[in-house]
Length: 73
Figure 1 (cartoon, rainbow, N blue to C red):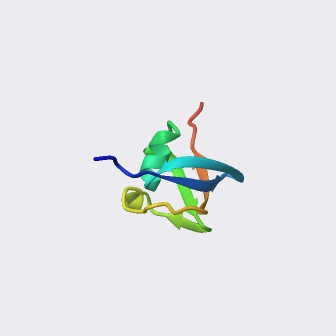
Figure 2 (cartoon, rainbow, N blue to C red):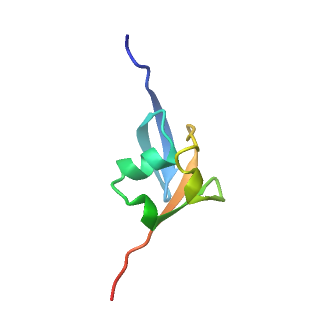
């Protein structure tokens, strides 16, 4: 049996990108190679709590801003 996938067009930090779906915020962060513990995500102008990343499904047309924290010294 074939698994159906959809293509999601997301606006990520101001740039339109396409991703295979279905996809959660946690899945997107992983696909981007980012550490989920070091990012903050805004979805459609709402900050998403880190505890909800795995539960929030992304939809075609969603607008996200992802900030990646980098330590230094």
